[in-house]
Image (tube, rainbow, N blue to C red; front, side, top):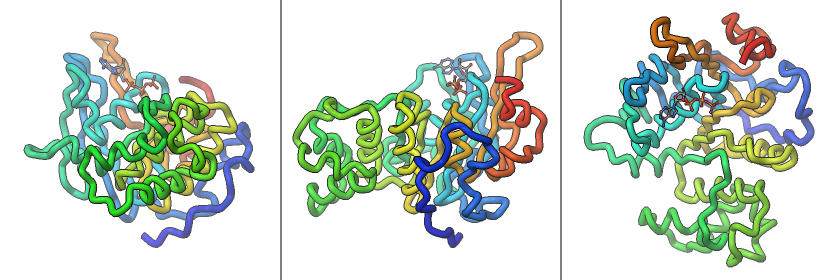
Length: 295
Ligand SMILES: Nc1ncnc2c1ncn2[C@@H]1O[C@H](COP(=O)(O)OP(=O)(O)OP(=O)(O)O)[C@@H](O)[C@H]1O
């Protein structure tokens, strides 16, 4: 798909609170109704924690160089689905995944696939900034070192990653200082720099701004829009304005209680262009949620 370059408009200029239908990110970036190039795809994805059926039959394709937001009420399985996309659920005791997750048409759950290798292609940024207790420089250099990446100049790679995460100018004179000395927003951008240092293809973000103030949030949102040129981004967010501001497409999930057990199983209700989801959703449950009538 020949995407136009990412918009130069910064989200700082956009209202943090406003009419959702006015602020959608794809307004000036017309996209086809369906992704032309799919990078990842969940097929008949079901997830269990022990006997608990947490996510039911999710089918969802993620387009290249697009930002896809996954939204929905608490407990509908957004983070569970996100963690399936780079096999982070392998690390959760009792979690079991059924179905397929295709990455460039290869099932990442197929026999013989190395989850560590998967995570070098599909990186993740977490809710709370989690820099290592190391210098700013070593936070970035760590991933390339442990994965044995061939690097001509580590200094250049560190600079490139920090520039890519719009942090270079703020830290270039203190690269040897502890990452803990940075503000929360800077730490989150450092974590994004750390993720892009290993040159992934896809970046998963789980509520990346929920621990940040509005200014730091706006900077991370600007960064996401900028990174979209080079990466495919999949973001879980509780913040509907954020989904509307940054994402090209939105997937709305909800949770349905089981009639006998009362357990709430997550499911995908609707997936569409963000502008459509926020202005003219196809499902009443989506409309109720985005208009604040439930959730
Ligand atoms: N490690 C776990 N063990 C058991 N159940 C879990 C585990 N992680 C999540 N769950 C359950 O799975 C369901 C989906 O959780 P998940 O965190 O994916 O939802 P979510 O939509 O991301 O929620 P939130 O918006 O509150 O973060 C919930 O009922 C949750 O309690």
